[in-house]
Amino acid sequence: MEPKPVRGICCRRSSCPRLGGPEAVVGHRYCRFEWDDLRFFLCVCRHKTVSAAGPHLGVDHATVSRRIARLEHALNTKLFEHRQTGFVPTTAGTRLQRMAEVVEAAINACEAELSDADSAVEGVVRIGAPDCFAACFLGARLPAFCKAHPKLHVDLLTITSPSSVSQREVDIFIGSSLPNEGRIISRKLTDYHAGLFASQSYLENRPPIGSVSDVLSDDYICDVEDLYSYQAEFAPVPSAQFRSANVLPLLQAVKGGAAIAVLPSYVACQDEALVPVFPAQINFHRSLYVLMHEDNKNLTRVRAVYDFIFSEVHKNRSIFCPEAAFNGSERAVTGKPIVISPRHETRTASLREMKKGPSGSAIRC
Image 1: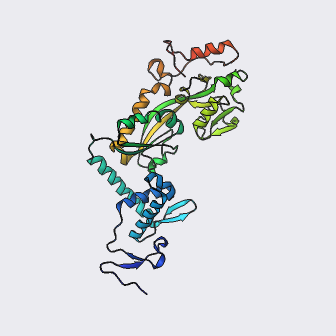
Image 2: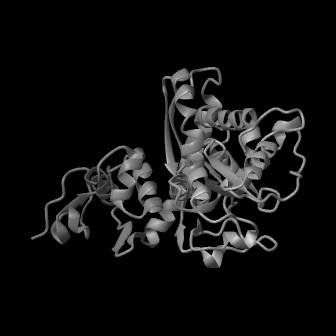
Image 3: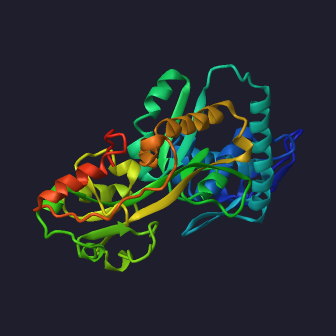
């Protein structure tokens, strides 16, 4: 039996099983969806599941599911197909995603243009960065910045994919690669050096390292992404028995005296117990970039965090390019290759000379 129409409302059947199955009655004439539901919809599009979207929205997965169901109900269409890999937008969902991103960009532009640039920095800013940069550099400096801006909340995430910016997982991304597409603004943050490091205990408990070939042993470890690819005669990647997708596990293995590995200078130089091995021969040059979406470039809170990151790196540039500590320039490291022999007195002298600049001022690495 057909339901009787309610005055002022057009009644039709819904195909959405979450809203009562095919017999549910849906009113559409005056049914309006909530603008904020678009934010939930976009987050599910970008994170593939309601469980993954929940933390980014500050709610649980059940709330996300209710918002998506409400939006589907208001639009009287199915927006997602639920597959093993997660939620995949339907044809209607893909069309809505494009339109919702336009709305999102307009809202961000409105906020950036009309908000008082001199007002307090407030809101949430999400930063994505490699684990080593997040833990060994940025994490120690962000609390003071947040304290200076009590209404600002910063989420620091360990992410290595630059696509996290275009997918709106983060507002700012710091990494060693650039995206191939998308409306992304990129700027080089800094160059940095990486080299081979070992702990004092490692050198003292093993045969002397007399040449680069001595490094190619079962104790060598590297990152699985092969960031430090072959350089001249130093091609240790095939010999690595243990690999890690992140730098921090490598750092812990080296500090524990169990292995020798290539580490970024800004990570290794914070521990005086770590010794550089053949710094004149094994010296990788890499770069870090900062990425953000074009829609966010004028948001006060994002710009404030963006500027802070650049300021902190500039103030501490000597740990990224250690030779800059000598005379403030970016000149190349020079010097004769050294032989590290823990059982020989010349090892101490070699290390002492390596850690001093022309002026005699000591540096850590």
